[in-house]
Length: 337
Image 1 (tube, helix red, strand yellow):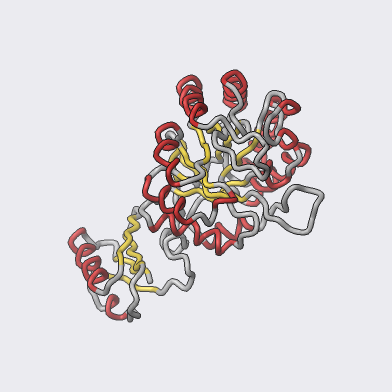
Image 2: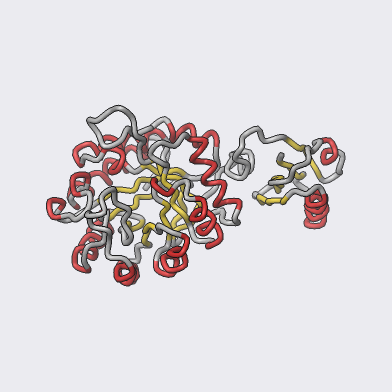
């Protein structure tokens, strides 16, 4: 259930309603907008009659939330949430572009890519340090050694870095070096990890599991939100189907579905969703046209030498061309880069 306070409700009114919520055995989650405050009831076992709140003078109305995800529901934030990343806000009118190599391989490779994507117009830099790979014999990332490199890249370019944590134990370490912690597709339902990134307070990029429904994806986000972290960005990266022409099947329709169901920003990963560099630009353009708040794209100066996912990585010049194409599409739908 959510409780919508009247515009004129003051702090004492809100505290009074929160006290009543907690007396019923629920947690109260506040969403304070420009005009009014919304109070969400989370947890609790007893059924609640909405009239016991609607009779209160400061309350405008109380409404049940029918979705299993309460905090992630658009009912909690009708105007949408914006997540700040080093000053830039994902989820607003401006579209963000995160770009960089799948994996940080060396200082020279990472910095070369960082300078190139910045010049092309990227908002943030991506680079994997801890790599979950299907094969134990594949490159697993530089590990802790690479964390110093992402800090250096930020200092030199000013681009905030997004990188993945694989376990709860890695979260504090990654949070000290990265501006945003990625929860990868394979870990979307790693509930201990979701709780850890929730408790970190750090912005989180939550990728959709390769076989997850939209509801399961939003329930994973709910874990992060319920642990006190409102800074969650969703990432569509394709789902596994019977089709083998691409690495995954890009679910473009998930973008407008999420926009209607949830207040959280959503970006698209056309690199992992297609697995082929020659399809990345077309799918990226479609995602922006469908309403995505941003893109996360793999870029490598020499894809043929990449230790991870070279086949889906764009060369810097192709990335720069895609940024300009994205700029034109954004303008056509009333947005900008």
